[in-house]
Length: 112
Image (cartoon, rainbow, N blue to C red):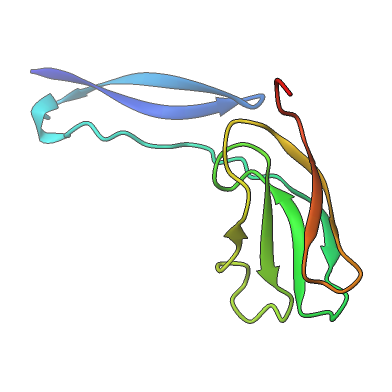
């Protein structure tokens, strides 16, 4: 019995599935798994809070370009980044108020 097994091959940044003929292996011995090959995350426009304890930035980590805040100490490697804007609009240009209590940003919203 011949089973075809797919093996990923990268040629010039393009993914191809190479089918190899293998004898003596049943195809049902290899369950199909969905694999996410690439995760693209964009973080940009970081700005320190006036007290230097937090950073506001735009990130695509949670879907779309949204305003996020993270602890500037770096103790949690960014894992505690908090998304503070939601919805379908893309956000941009975050800035702290002088007292550090508010964040202003631009949002590409439709309507009034």
